[in-house]
Amino acid sequence: MIKIFSNKGISIIEALMAALLTAVAVISLLPMQDISQRTGFRSDYLGRATGIMQYELELRENQIMIGTIPASPINRQITVSDPINGTSAAAGDATFNVVTTTSVNLSPANSWLVNVRVTWTGGPANGISSSIIVTRQTRF
Image 1 (cartoon, rainbow, N blue to C red):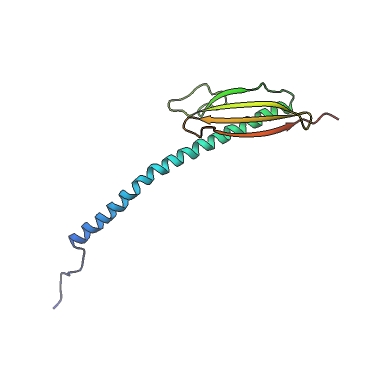
Image 2: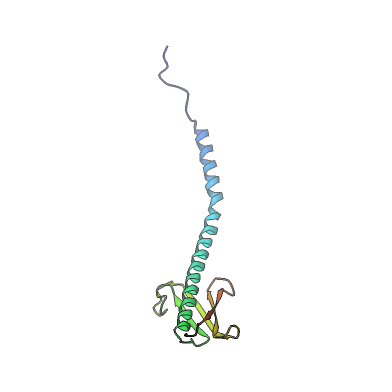
């Protein structure tokens, strides 16, 4: 005799248990989404601040190399939507505060110390900073 129907398959209890285990796994992963999002935002701000800091260091180095010693300190606010002028902020735009100080370095002669500090709302209390010593070679 040939069976047309088989008893093999998934019962309703097995299906409900699988759904319950899947729901528990998904619910246990939900808190990680918030942590992941905050970490992503933090790294985005840090990357942007690092780019702004490097741009500012190179700009001041170039000014010193061509003979224009920048005033000190220079306080600027830079927005992400207008990084050069920082004047036209879009709604919800990130604003970075940049403080650049330039001082005469006593040794070696004809050198300057340029220090840049970048801070932003929600970032580290002291922000990030970097320095560079710029020297100009006298003409031959």
